[in-house]
Image (cartoon, rainbow, N blue to C red; front, top):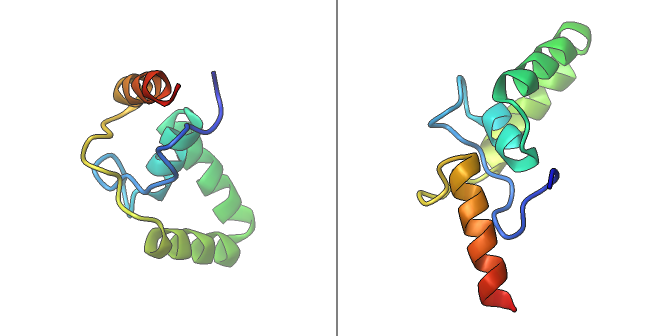
Length: 88
C-alpha cells in the first residue's frame, strides 16, 4: 500500500541523504524513489529557487532525525506489519 506509513512519521534521513536528508525522508515516508524526490526538488529549485531553498532549510531544521530502528522500506514494512498485529 502506497502512502504514508502508520506510526513512523515523517523524518529526515541524514544517513541516506545528500544534504540534510529531507528528500530521503520524504521518499521513505511516501515510499517513493529517493532520486525521484531529489529530481522534483531540483525542478522546483530551477523555477522557484528561494521558496524551495527556504522550504528545504525549514524542513531540515524542523524534522527530527530518523529513528535508529528505521532502516528503509523493508524494515519499515516489518515494523508496520508487527505494529498492526500488536494493536488489534
